[in-house]
Image (cartoon, rainbow, N blue to C red; front, side, top):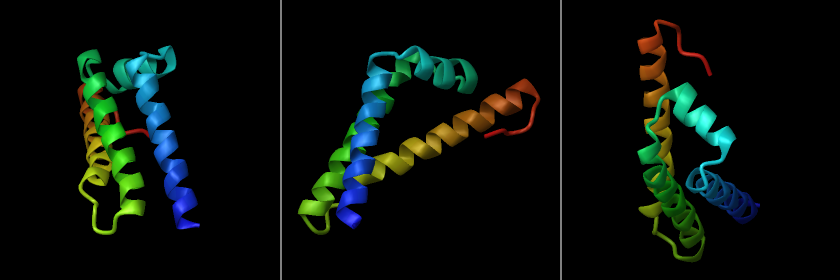
Length: 96
Protein backbone atom coordinates (compact mmCIF):
# COMPACT_ATOMS: atom_id res chain seq x y z
CA UNK A 1 0.00 0.00 0.00
CA UNK A 2 2.79 2.44 0.95
CA UNK A 3 4.66 1.74 -2.28
CA UNK A 4 1.55 2.30 -4.39
CA UNK A 5 0.72 5.64 -2.76
CA UNK A 6 4.35 6.77 -2.98
CA UNK A 7 4.52 5.93 -6.69
CA UNK A 8 1.24 7.75 -7.36
CA UNK A 9 2.52 10.85 -5.55
CA UNK A 10 5.80 10.68 -7.52
CA UNK A 11 3.91 10.48 -10.82
CA UNK A 12 1.65 13.41 -9.89
CA UNK A 13 4.68 15.50 -8.90
CA UNK A 14 6.44 14.75 -12.20
CA UNK A 15 3.30 15.70 -14.15
CA UNK A 16 3.14 18.95 -12.17
CA UNK A 17 6.77 19.73 -13.02
CA UNK A 18 6.15 19.05 -16.72
CA UNK A 19 3.21 21.46 -16.65
CA UNK A 20 5.44 24.13 -15.11
CA UNK A 21 8.14 23.62 -17.75
CA UNK A 22 5.59 23.77 -20.58
CA UNK A 23 4.04 26.86 -18.97
CA UNK A 24 0.52 25.46 -19.05
CA UNK A 25 -1.94 28.39 -19.07
CA UNK A 26 -3.78 27.04 -16.02
CA UNK A 27 -0.54 26.67 -14.05
CA UNK A 28 0.73 30.10 -15.10
CA UNK A 29 -2.59 31.69 -14.13
CA UNK A 30 -2.57 30.06 -10.70
CA UNK A 31 1.10 30.28 -9.74
CA UNK A 32 2.18 33.44 -11.52
CA UNK A 33 -0.88 35.66 -11.64
CA UNK A 34 -2.68 34.64 -8.44
CA UNK A 35 0.19 33.69 -6.13
CA UNK A 36 2.75 36.05 -7.68
CA UNK A 37 5.68 33.70 -8.30
CA UNK A 38 7.88 35.09 -11.11
CA UNK A 39 7.96 33.05 -14.33
CA UNK A 40 11.74 32.70 -14.14
CA UNK A 41 11.31 30.58 -11.00
CA UNK A 42 9.24 27.93 -12.80
CA UNK A 43 12.25 25.84 -13.91
CA UNK A 44 13.60 25.87 -10.35
CA UNK A 45 10.22 24.80 -8.96
CA UNK A 46 10.05 22.02 -11.54
CA UNK A 47 13.57 20.89 -10.62
CA UNK A 48 12.60 20.73 -6.93
CA UNK A 49 9.57 18.66 -7.81
CA UNK A 50 11.54 16.23 -9.96
CA UNK A 51 14.18 15.89 -7.24
CA UNK A 52 11.41 15.15 -4.75
CA UNK A 53 9.88 12.51 -7.03
CA UNK A 54 13.27 10.88 -7.56
CA UNK A 55 13.83 10.92 -3.81
CA UNK A 56 10.49 9.24 -3.20
CA UNK A 57 11.21 6.45 -5.68
CA UNK A 58 14.83 5.97 -4.55
CA UNK A 59 13.59 5.95 -0.95
CA UNK A 60 11.51 2.90 -1.78
CA UNK A 61 14.47 1.09 -3.32
CA UNK A 62 17.23 2.10 -0.89
CA UNK A 63 16.53 2.41 2.81
CA UNK A 64 17.81 5.58 4.45
CA UNK A 65 17.83 7.76 1.33
CA UNK A 66 15.57 10.68 2.21
CA UNK A 67 17.50 13.75 1.13
CA UNK A 68 16.02 14.14 -2.35
CA UNK A 69 12.51 13.61 -0.98
CA UNK A 70 13.02 16.70 1.18
CA UNK A 71 12.70 18.89 -1.93
CA UNK A 72 8.89 18.51 -2.04
CA UNK A 73 8.22 19.91 1.45
CA UNK A 74 10.65 22.76 0.71
CA UNK A 75 8.72 23.50 -2.50
CA UNK A 76 5.48 23.47 -0.49
CA UNK A 77 6.86 25.82 2.15
CA UNK A 78 7.91 28.36 -0.48
CA UNK A 79 4.51 28.08 -2.18
CA UNK A 80 2.73 28.80 1.10
CA UNK A 81 5.08 31.70 1.85
CA UNK A 82 4.50 33.21 -1.61
CA UNK A 83 0.76 32.87 -1.23
CA UNK A 84 0.87 34.57 2.18
CA UNK A 85 3.07 37.42 0.93
CA UNK A 86 0.78 37.97 -2.06
CA UNK A 87 -2.31 38.09 0.18
CA UNK A 88 -0.69 40.61 2.52
CA UNK A 89 0.38 42.81 -0.40
CA UNK A 90 -3.18 42.80 -1.71
CA UNK A 91 -4.48 43.78 1.72
CA UNK A 92 -6.62 40.68 2.05
CA UNK A 93 -6.72 37.63 4.20
CA UNK A 94 -4.94 34.42 3.30
CA UNK A 95 -7.32 32.31 1.25
CA UNK A 96 -6.70 28.78 0.17
